[in-house]
Length: 511
View 1 (tube, rainbow, N blue to C red):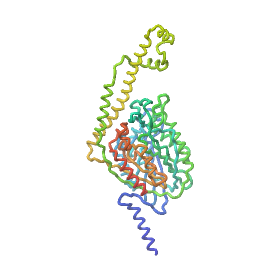
View 2: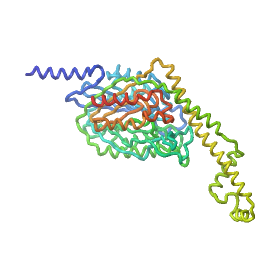
View 3: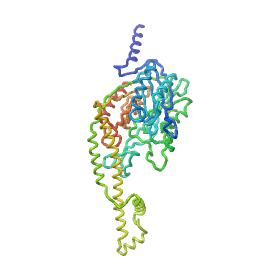
């Protein structure tokens, strides 16, 4: 009966338009063809740097699948609001303008920051206008595309910056304070070496765009200290240079809250993100070349807001840290050495441990004659060096403690001034063909991303941190007792992880 077919199609169309209770903002458009457009706009703040090593960009991928519209925006910046020069009103301003001018629902717009340090703290002042410009250009350039999904691997350029120590505590890699002694370190945290890849090809076989997802802090810099998009910028250039003309690579930052670039504390060589970016780009290209695209390319978006509890344990964390500060201050001991006298003694006594103060025959002569002058001198010098070294180690620990106490106090004040005991957090799930993204607006530890990949019913699932806002760090439940920066630069309670992972599981099951 013809009427049944019409009713069936009408019901499907209504489902697509309405979603489920306002939560599902895009459904499946049967028989539709995915269309996509891409563009990029330079956002380098040229007035703030004497040297521009390489440019920063906002890139936009416009997607259309029947009645469903979505946009992915990637920004070479430290964050989407919160910190840096991108204001807290940026996300709403950009989304509103795109919705008004292109009829793309705000909930279907994903904005990811690469978490670029240095130049990423100070992008061009008109970043919102340039973002909308990139989206409009991408929307105008839409063409029918095929989709392909795959993954690459890169294990040479990142490491977990958290260390487990012999005393059960933790330390981390920062330029703000020294590293712990090597002999105190017993283990390090996990890394996610996976590169998640979406390839979009035009119908003529040319690649239109590549999205690639990877986790790691882009704060390596370049030798000339100029503005740079860091390793994601160099990796994107490698990809774009090895595809057909006009193809654009969009980097999606993953869950890299506790992931550092390797050799971040190297003092023997210039810090150079280009080497790391080239390795990431080559590894991504190796995978991109092996991806086969298909005509089917479903587009689906789910956007929900969850309430995460604000932490209330600040004083509980601050008090023992402050007690440790007091203990360390009391542990400092006077010594006749300063650095000028300590350093040459330290070198000499470690190079020539048996006879540090003179030639061996003099020591033998004193032993034969019962004279212990050199022996006594060495003992006194070693006592002084030991006290000086203990003072140095105490200073190192004091620097770390003071930094973390300051962060805890900052977030304590923030939460005390907040109107509610919870904070609204946007969680977005997006499906493009078999490519799945799930988001969080903060610096999430790598283990949470690994958990999500393991729980997902989809083969290709990739987490996107620093997305649709910024709420500082989100450590794992176990990490809250570590006492390092990720745990202290955080204002949400440990329960956040269970709440978030449960919601992500629901979203993944509905994508």
